[in-house]
Amino acid sequence: MISSVLVANRGEIAGRVFRTCRELGIRTVAVYSDADESALHARVADAAVRLPGAAPSETYLRGELIVKAALSAGADAVHPGYGFLSENAGFARAVLDAGLVWIGPPPEAIEAMASKTRAKELMGLASMADVKEGDLPVLVKAAAGGGGRGMRVVRRLADLEGELAAARAEALSAFGDGEVFIEPYVEGGRHVEVQILADTHGTVWPLGTRDCSLQRRHQKVIEEAPAPGLTSELTDSLYAMAVRAARAVDYVGAGTVEFLVADGKAHFLEMNTRLQVEHPVTESVFGIDLVALQIRVAEGAPLEKEPPGARGHAIEGRLYAEDPANGWTPQTGTLHRFTVPDVRLDTGYWDGDEIGVHYDPMLAKAVAYAPTRAEALRKLAGALERATIHGPITNRDLLVRSLRHPEFATARMDTGFYDRHLTELTAPVPDPYAHPSPTTALNGVAARPPLVALAAALADAHGRSRFGGWRNLPSQPQTKRYLMDGTEHEVHYRHGREGLTADGVRVLHTAADLVVLEVDGVRRTFEVARYGDAVYVNTTALTALPRFPDPSAQQEPGSLLAPMPGTVVRVAEGLAEGSPVRAGEPLIWLEAMKMEHKISAPASGTLSVLHASPGQQVEVGTLLAVVQDNEPPSP
Image (cartoon, rainbow, N blue to C red; front, top):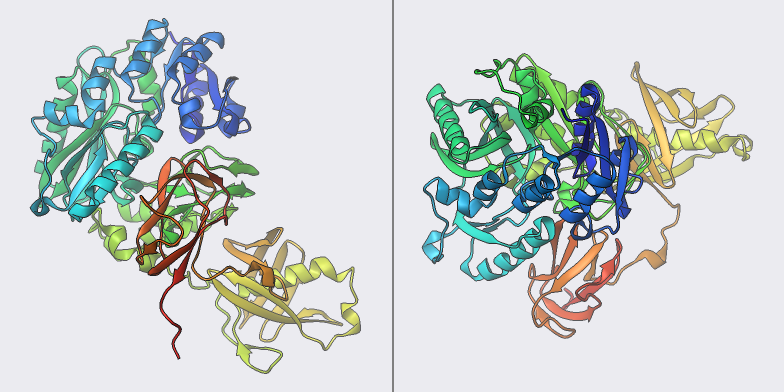
C-alpha cells in the first residue's frame, strides 16, 4: 500500500490531494519553487523539497527534479495534480522507471489522448490542414495541456499567422510543448463533459455530466453537475462515447471526456487524462472522493461494478485575482484576508499570502451543493456575496452576478455568455446600502455618498480623534474622498459634543474597525479594515484619496502602462519610435501568470516613445510606450 505521496504540483490542487492523503493516513511531500517558498501547499505538507528557480520551465516542468525530490523525501508514489506535467507521458514513465507508483493513467494512454490531434484521430476525426476564408471562424488550440492556454479564436484570415505564433509561445511556456492545431469554431454551443474513472480490472465508471459553458479566454469560470437540460438520449450518448474513448486506450484512473453540444448533438473535443479543476462538483453529487479512488485504483483495488447513484446539484465558481472589466487582467499583491462562508473552499492561499506573477491567478474554488439547482445557485451566490476578500481585485462580483443572471438561472447559457453579457456584468455594483437622503456639501450642493464611504470616513475619524482638536471646532464639516468602482465620492461629517454626526444618518457606534449607522429606522453594521490607502467596508473595496491630488501622478496622453508585473515577450514586427499605428493595433505582448496579454494602441497616431523590449521585466505602471494622437484638437 502507498505510504507517502509527493504531489508534483502547487496551489489548491496540491492542498486538496494532501487533505485526502491525511484522511487516509498517508504522509505528504510538497515541491515548491523559490516564488512559492511561503506558499500554503509547502507549509501544510509533512515534508517539502525546493525546486530552484521561479518560472515553471525551471521548476514544476522539470520532471527529473521532481522524481529526484520524491526519492530524496522517501515518497513511494507521485500524484501529478492538473496542469504542468500531469499529461506528460515521459514524466509518467520516469516516475515508474524510478520504482515509484504513478497515481494516474498508463503513459501509453496519456500519449494517445494527451495530444488533442492524436485523440481526434483515435476518435475518427481530423484537424484542419488548410484554412480558407469560408472556414472562419476557426479555433487554434494547444495539442498538450488545457485551461485555455494556447487557445485562440480567429475570425480574420489575416490574423491567423499571428495567433498561431502566440498560441505556440503560450503553449510552450505553460506545458513545455508548442504544438498547436486548428479546428472549426462552433459558436452558440455548450461545453459539456463526462467524468470517468477506470480500474485495472476492466471496469469503467461514467460519473455523470458537467456543464462548463461559462468561460473567459476559453478557461472555465463556473461549472456544475449534472449538466442541466440534457435529454436522456443525449446523456446516454455522451456516456457511451466517454466509455468508448477510455476503453480505446485501456484507460486507468480518473479522466474527463469533453464535448461541445450544439443543436442537440455532441461534438468530441478532447480527453483530459488527469483530474479536472471542477472535479468537486462531481464528488458532491455522487458522494465520493475522487482522489481517494485514484489512490485505491493505483494500489490495484477494483471498483464496484456499477458507480454510485447521483443526487442533488453542485455548482463551482473559480475565484480569480483578475479584473474582468479590464480585459481579465491578472492582479498581484497581498491577500490580507480571505474567507468564503458556508461552502466548500479549495484554496492555495491563507491570510497574508502574496499573489505573484509566475502562476495562474486562481485563488480558490467555491463549491455549493443543494438538493436542487436553484438552491445550489442561491447558496453559492450568497456565500460569495458575503465573502471577505481583502487584497487584489477579484472576479467575485462577476461570479455573483453571473449566478443570478436570468440566462444562467434558467440554464440557457452557452460558451458565448461572457461575449454577450460582460459589459452589464462588470458595470459598477449598486450600493447595497444606498443612502436614501442627501447630505450637504460645503458648497451647498447636495451629494449622496454611499454609506460604505461614510462608514470608512467615520471609522478613520474615530481612529484619529484622540490625537487631534476636532472638538474645538464642532461646527466645521470634515471631508474625506474615496474611490469606489472608478468613481470618486466625497463624504462630509462633523465631530461635535455628542460625537460624530452626518446629515440624514444616525451614528449609533464608531470604532476604528466597526461602524453602526441608522437610516430611516434601519440599522446597518459595517466592518472596516484598512491597509494603507486600501479600505474595505464589509465586502466593498475603496481607496482613500489624498485631499489634494498629486500633480506628479499625471501621465502623458497616449501612455501605455504595464497593467501587471510580467515579462515583455515580443513587440510588433518593425515597431519603432516614429512608426504609425492604428487604434486597437496590438503593439506589445506581456507574459504574466502563464498567459499572454496584448497591449494595443489606444488611438491612431504615431509611436513617439518605445521603452519595451523582449525579455524586459516590468512592474505595474511601467511606461512601455506612448502613442501621440495625430488628430488636431477640436476648436
